[in-house]
Structure formats: structure tokens, C-alpha cells
Amino acid sequence: MQILNLESGIFFQMGKGQNWRVVHPDMGAKQITLNYGKHAPGQEFTQHTHDETEDVIVVLDGEGAIRQGSVYTPIKSGEVIFVPAHEVHGTVNTSNKLIRVFSFQSPPDMALYRGQRDSSADSIPKPIEGHTSGVQVIDMAKAGPIFGKPGDWRNVVSKDKGSKHLSLNYIKLYYGDEFDHEPLQTESIYVLMTGTVDVYADDKRWRLKSDDVIFLSPGDTFKMKQVGGGPARLVHCQAI
Image (tube, rainbow, N blue to C red; front, side, top):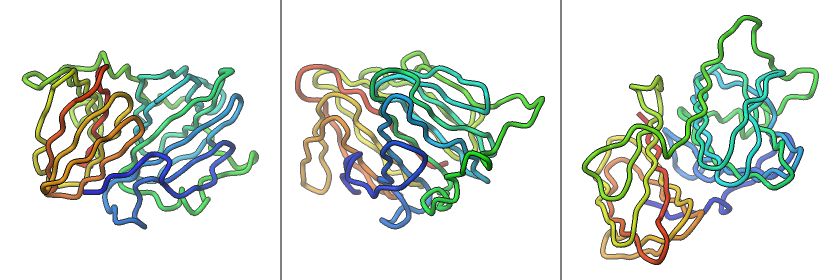
């Protein structure tokens, strides 16, 4: 288990704006990656495709659009964008304020970090005419509930909803709510979006706040408890 932060990663170039790879093969990940981006008004994360990789993008703050050729689909804080493999997609800040996003990919696409997806204007991929996009924009708080959990749990992305490689749950914990993360057979990542939680594992305690990250290898386990004032909002993404 590794405790990280969204801004603790390695910078990589992709269009304009600032982008970091936070969880990636160079630090031990084999099945899943996590990227983080901050884009000022007008900045765009270049349109691209992945060969076999699925992409799940979470809007942390602000608003903008998913761009697919000439089509712009609005996105805002609290929404998830599920992008199947082979779909042309990019993100663009269409607002007058900063947008912050983070995204999970599986299987890892190292070409993204080598700059091979950062196309010039004349070589940007375009959607095929007549193609119906499989990209979905989902309000996390309105996704299907998972019953019997402390707080409010929602399943946002899963095999039942068309994914082949990733599953994502949205979790909202109220004061004193706690749960045990049971061991999984695949890698997974938690990202804390708001609030404060304590994490316990191997006789140690970590206090995590907004933008903190937990990267879990298969078999890792821990206990999490919400502490502090307002609710803790987080997502858990697992390679499947």
C-alpha cells in the first residue's frame, strides 16, 4: 500500500496545461494508472485514442467539455466520463475558471507518457463519420446505490455498465462512518476528493485530506474512518 498525493507525480506533456502521472508502471503499477491535470481557461488535453485502454475521467473542480472532433459534451465537478477503448476524446476548459480532473486507465498506456498521443493539429484523430460514441458522462451522486454500506456508496462504472477493464465506486462518508477495505485480486486506487479520513494498516495510522491517494496492490487491506467536520467524498477505482 502506498500513500500518495495528486501533485506528487511525474509531469508529462499532453496539449496545454499541467499533467502528472501519479500511479504508473515506473513506480510499480502493473494493471492500473492514475493521472492528474490542471487546465486554465481555453487549455485542452489533446484529443487522442487508446488501443486497448479504457479511460475513466473524474472532474474534481470546475467545468469544461469532452471533445470528440467538432462535438463538445459539457462536463462539470462531480461527474465521471467513461471512455471505452478506441474512442477519440480530449478534455477542454470551456469556462473562465481552472478545471481539475484526474483519470484512471487500464491496461496502462505507456504511449501516453512517451508523448506519442500528443498529436499536432494536422494529425489529431477524428471520429469516423456515422459512428455512435460509446463515451458516457455520469453524475456520480446519482449512480446506482450499493446497499448495506456505511454512508452513501454508488457504483458508477462496472462490467454491468459496459466496462471491460475498470470498476469505479463513489463513496460519501459522514462523521464516524468507517469501513474495512477487503483484499482484492487486482490493483486499485482510492482518491479523496473532500473531507478528512484516518487510514489504519499494519499498526500505523495516516490522516488523509483532499487530493490524497491510496494505491493498493493485490492483497492489501486497511480500515478507513471519517473524521472532522463535513462529509468525506472519495472514489475507488479497481482494475477488473
